[in-house]
Length: 260
Image 1 (cartoon, rainbow, N blue to C red):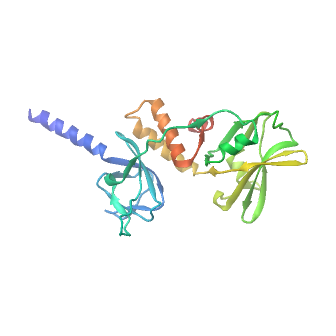
Image 2: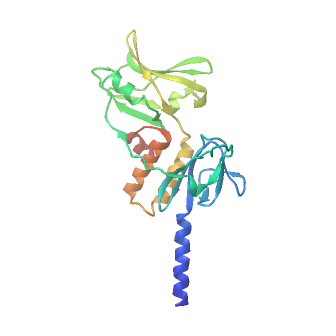
């Protein structure tokens, strides 16, 4: 009887402990844990009763729990106080956003304008079908992206098979074969060249997170959620997380990256 009671107590303690532990997926800003003054990073584990110190009201921490799923932790400034600190359990926000993906091509400039009106996640490559009757593609008719880099205007011709537009991240953000820092670029715009005519399509809002760090985040998310969800449900959670954290996603492009 004593052994049984001890086993049940240990099981309860283990389950309760897991329910109060949160794995850190991503940190925006600078957030420290009070007990050791250590700045949070991906793969850290925090508990419900840990007190966090935020550097700014714009800081945010994305976390996941094996029982309750994904959450966002944000500071909640107290009226009349300048301190941005709180217990984890008091500022947890369930990340219940719904997945919204896009499949299908672009038929007119308006399709591009609508799609890129919001931030779009660019992994290693983005591929979209285009209407080649509206946008015939050849050596003389093609899409290109123009952006500013350290005060210089850069034009990048995009690789375009007869029916597709491809934005390759490494090729886009390189000059003379050497990679450049994406943070040093600005004002990205998409154009279409047809003979001597240049058509402005739209401005591009693109999110370009570090891919190595992003792989660590998605692997951690899959690992933690695999104890609760089926493989299919865990995959949908990963897609939803990417959309929530980094921007609009295209299902085929993201799935191809996740399989690599």
